[in-house]
Length: 149
Image 1 (spheres, rainbow, N blue to C red):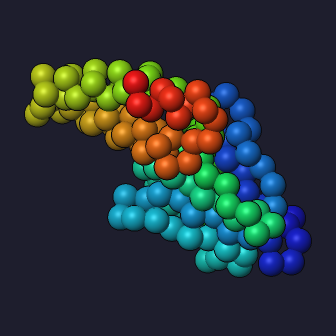
Image 2: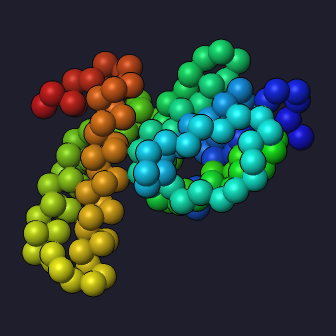
């Protein structure tokens, strides 16, 4: 149970708990934009797409990448289940750049294929989200250097 005016947030990946704590609010990326969640939000389930998740904890914003998944939202708990989650400083920019190039090439080859084209499109979305978040929020010098090489 979260304390007054706070909401408990858990971000979980197949590899374990990425983040857990009591927060003021959380904003997740959904297909049509963003969904902001605060204490006493109407219970719901939301499908998530790759993008930035913002967490307001004790007046300080934290930003991370979350990929496809869903959020189960209750009055005092948000459970975010995603395929992957990363802090900006942990994103390997060179790897994400190569992944974007590979996925773009595969998508051009598989365009119109009922299963391969969506897979490739999702891979492109994940790589683009990683690069965007690293460029916007990374603070480690080596991460910043990777962005420009």
